[in-house]
Image (cartoon, rainbow, N blue to C red; front, side, top):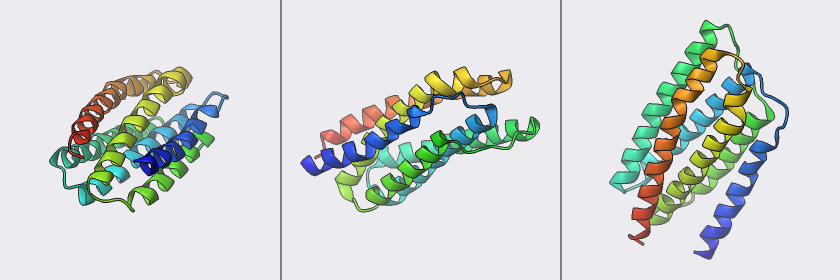
Length: 175
């Protein structure tokens, strides 16, 4: 259990660097961040689909795959329609790097340890995504259509967070 706590802290601490970017993101960078978030959620969910033996975890993973794929499509469609090419930023680069590190460590786990770690990460990362939406992405967006898409996605992220919390809590009873 102590190793899991140390691993969780080691993986979560760098994620807070995402919020260190103080300059305003422009719309192309915001799209880049949203794409990075969606890709991270999809990649982790695909791993959960293949590794987890818990029906709730698998179902949650499928929900993330479906909804984050749809969100990526909506944001890519907006970018094409508005002739905006997604761009990377220190925020999106940090998100990608942190997720790659996390997935590498997660692949080493199995059974209930995998499920607990994955669901714990989903709680933390969805909370961080919501914080990023509220503190950076929505306030920095200059296009009203982009703001609207960000506003539409926020309740879904919040729903993912709440479901992840419930599943994580139920897994804690299965140790």
